[in-house]
Image 1 (cartoon, rainbow, N blue to C red):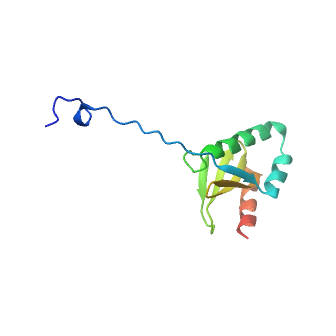
Image 2: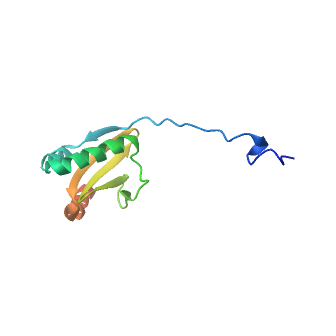
Image 3: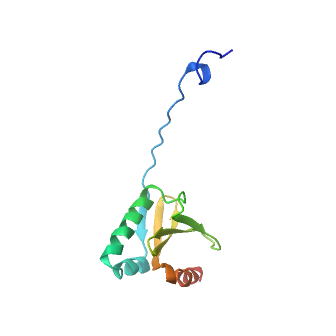
Length: 114
């Protein structure tokens, strides 16, 4: 029935669907602000770039982002060099909980569980 009309249904090209995603709002907790303030300037620029990337897509889609298990609420981790950014997503808001060195990650996660 549809032979000779190309590889698409009825010989028509596939529809291109454009989805526009609105940016998420980003807020930082007081401990996160304190953490960022204590970092060297070279690291701060990478952290800020990471925060800006979370505005557009905070959900885990790359190996740099990971959903952490064992929390009553969803908690995520973003890997930036030797630092880890711990955050949660509520509706259209990303809340940065902490920014810690990877060596101190376990300790920070234990504190967040309390």
